[in-house]
Image (cartoon, rainbow, N blue to C red; front, side):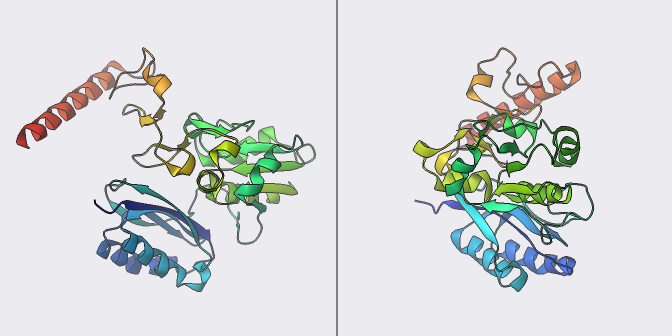
Length: 301
């Protein structure tokens, strides 16, 4: 039996003034270990999701943690039968997660970390406003019971949501979460700067919660959207049932597939009414070509 592919999601906020110099050695190591996925380097830290063998992933994590500034880097693991990514990217960025607001530094000020085991009690407190800091298409396939969906299309829209919908004098306790913890950590730093005094965020994000909290005790509903071919994961970080619409790249649930607006490879209920005739024809042609290629590959075997 082939060794399963390890998928590691990681991030760490740290002051990396020399981040540009870190790229080439890290890229060379990843290439030598056949690592795939994406790593982002910025002055504020490192972020990414990568896949590879056990030996390869361990080698990359060891290299990162060998830097004293990244010694406390944490990661979440799941497993796949094959690489969920097609290629490797190691990129230099202005931010490792783009909020678009200058001088937001989780290294300087941040909210209170909450371990997965303590999360249920916190979000069950009626005085706590629970906010999902992810994008609307991620929230669509799963979130925590009772959480507020800001309906943002990108993380850059979160500051506007805060200014329009939240008030430090009224919302005295705020708890936030995201996929792996990076967005809610940066969001907590931003909100602290905006005068919100009591701000919590889920340490390790949804992925850590699904990994550590038993399903029988869970307040999570649905699947957690992930940015690879698995699309969604469930408790124990097992691959879920969600697929991906090739028209709009949103997640497609089993219920969506039953809709008359779902056409495999063309559209889903979210984008069906938005597609032009030209787009529909192009997607249909792509679907045909993929089917023919699959049939040719089958005959070749």
